[in-house]
Amino acid sequence: MSKVATDTFNVPELYLLAAAFGGNVLFGLPEKQIYQLRGEEVFAEAHHRHKEKEIITEEGKITKAGAMIIQAIEYYHQSKKYVRINNLMFAFIEDNDDELIVLVEVEEQKLYKLYVMSKAIILKLLLDKFSVISREPEEDEKTFLTKELNNEQRHEIENFEPGDSLLNIEFFHVNETNQQLDNPSFYQQWLAFPKDKKLITVDTVKRKFYHTSQYWFLKMIFDELEFPYKEAN
Figure 1 (spheres, rainbow, N blue to C red):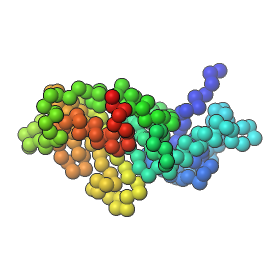
Figure 2 (spheres, rainbow, N blue to C red):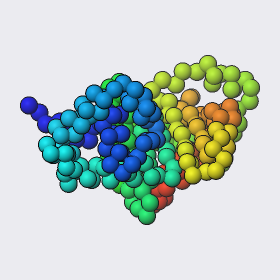
Figure 3 (cartoon, rainbow, N blue to C red):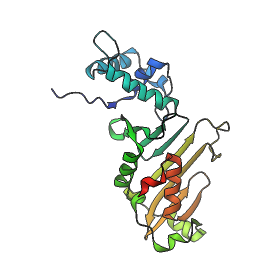
Figure 4 (cartoon, helix red, strand yellow):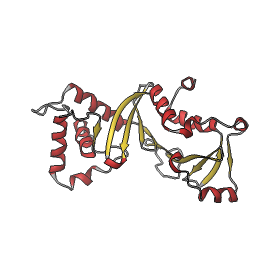
């Protein structure tokens, strides 16, 4: 029998591990109460899966590997902000400028993969995975940051299907006191995709459409993920 993947979890498994430090909310996941209403069997099965993955022993004690996983989930839980790029959620570790917690949603299976990754590796991952991030800028993109589209251009974009090239980017600053979706200091959502060699971005909250410079776009991502700019070389 093949060994159970120890980096992949369903939602009850993650909440059961979070209970080790008293965590009842994990950002970006369905609410814990949804699973509690389904009865004790849901978490009993999660407990069994933890034994299979050697996160806990048969006696119920946390293993060394289990302690590391719980620590990563606790860092995720304590993050002061989150960045979501498509199915990747990034959380920040206090006093650690080199690594991020990465929670990957495996959408079709309703499972999540959990990693602690260096920012250098994350940058390479983003460049390899998303063509809109690695695209080469047009020459004129050095002369502007963003240009808001007029009504005709906007109408054309609203009827355009970007397909797999679409990037959904969200920023959540959970320590912000004014937690309203129309407060950009708390929340922003951007859609980004190429069209006719141009980079188009959409501020979904303000409903504004832009022809955007690649330099501005990358700066936004780098700033939110707190990447050092030297990593771009």
